[in-house]
Image (cartoon, rainbow, N blue to C red; front, top):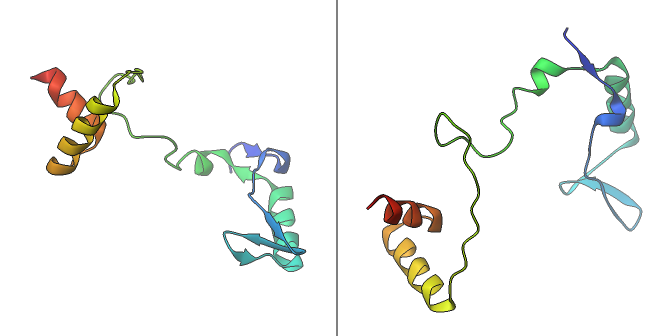
Length: 100
C-alpha cells in the first residue's frame, strides 16, 4: 500500500431529515458508520484515490483557461438557438465561431 489519507481528510455528504441520516437518499446504519470508521482508521491508498477522474477532461496538451464573456439577452438567445439547432453546447458554438 502507498501513502495513506487520514479519516479527517475525507468528505461525506450526509443529509439529516427527521433524525434519519441518509446519503444520496439511502439510510445510513450504525453498522455502516462503524465499517467506514474502521476502514478510515486503516487509511486509504492515495494512488487508488488519485485514479478518480476529477474535474473536466483536458482539451489539449496545455491547460485550458476560462474566459468570461458579456453578451446581451438577444445574443444569448441567438447563441442558444444555434446550439440547440446544431446539438452543441454554447462553448462549442463559440469555439467554432472563433476558428472560422
